[in-house]
Image (cartoon, rainbow, N blue to C red; front, side, top):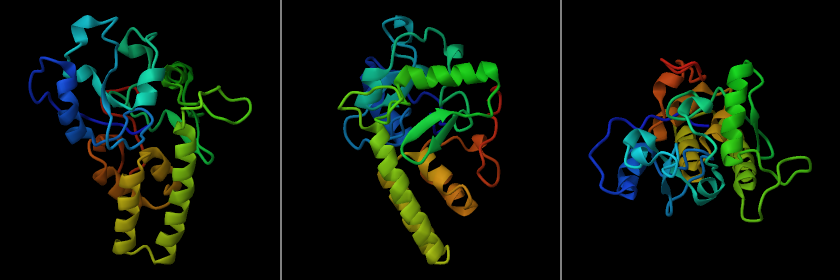
Length: 228
C-alpha cells in the first residue's frame, strides 16, 4: 500500500466533501487503500468514522481518499489510530506483500504486534478478498483483486518491453505513463523490484507518495517517527 503525505491543511472546510479537490490535488486520483485509479467518483474517506468520532468530521488529518468498494467495505470497528496501520502515518509498503494473481497478504517480515496491526488494516477494507478457493469471499461487484491481477500482467509486459528497449529514457517514460494510468502503485513497485530507475520514477510521479519512506534505490524503509 502506497505511503502518502497529504501535507498541511490548505483551508478550513464547512463540509467534509468540500476537501475532495484538495485531496485529489495532493494525492492524485487514486484510492488510498486499494490503490486503484478512480478518475471520477472518489470520495473523502474518514480514517476514524465520523459516526464514532463526530469531532473529527472536518479534520484534515482524518481524511484520505476512498473508492466506492473500499468505502463500502471499510468497517467501523477501528476506534483508535494505533489499532491499525495507515498509509499517511506508517510505511505501509513494508506491511503488505503483493503477488501475481491479485493477492495481498501481510508481510512475513513483521513482528507480532505489527503483524496484528497489518492484519487489522487488511481486514478493515477486505483487501485480501479474492475469488480463489480458500480466500475471503467477495461480492460480485468487488473487482479489486481482478484489477490488481490485470495490472500485474500488464506491468510484466511493460517490464519486458523496458528491458528489450535497453532501459532507455523513452522506455522509462512509457512505463511511468502506463503506471499512472492503471494505478496500483504497489504492483508496479513489486514487478519492477530489480529496476531502481523505474522505482525512483514511480515514487516521484505518483502525487503525494511519501519520499522519506524509501531509500536512494527506492526500497521501502521505516517511516521517520513511526514504528514501521
